[in-house]
Image 1: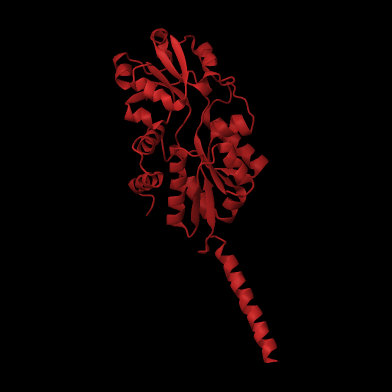
Image 2: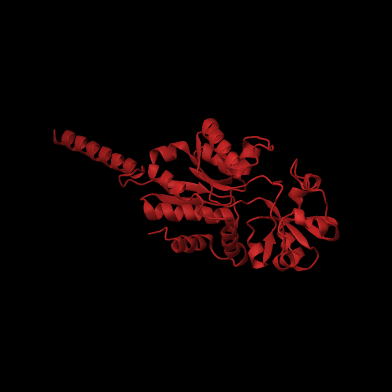
Length: 307
């Protein structure tokens, strides 16, 4: 009889321990915690954003965040989130809108807000994913020149380059040179002028070519940290040639429904970082070689968002 009682007691204890362990893996607004995995593609900008998410979630909730790096592409982040290997991934409105969702830009939908809202709605309807409001910056293709040269020649927009481009060499990202529907040839057709020479090269060599004096202007990503380090200015795309690529976080719907405190946090990131600020944060990581987590923490402390 005692053995039966002891056996039943043991079963009860094991059951209670298993139940307690299960609770420890769940999160909510009552102090229970979970581990949330956020994925980034493997370069400075998105690693900084993932670390911002990690730092704020861990500072303001009982949840833990695991940053999964080097995914390689936004589409890899999407697939991993779809399969629940990740719960959050870093992406861009243009990447999802033109790539995953296979939409086409027109005169009616080049507005960044329109692109975001259509992306948000389609991601929700088709994939049960939540697109948080954009961080506030736009990382699209651009044309950059020396700040001092731009000021000296009163050049502010890409249209202003019409008088100078025929005598200038432009370093061009190989991807952009022949980008379907949005490459250099289409750019020339829209703006009505071409550069003396458009020299294709690997993105990593563009700024070195500029520093060496081999080119006069560069085709850049508008949040490149090298722009700050080399005191260059991105000219306004006054004809709205390039699609909007606003940085966003994308989460599984079941995560924001189960853990509303996480939704509150990602919603609070709306407009947090403008394009010049993102350039500076990128400079600290890509040029100064600082740790993305340290850069994210310093930025958040400056903004008073970890208290």
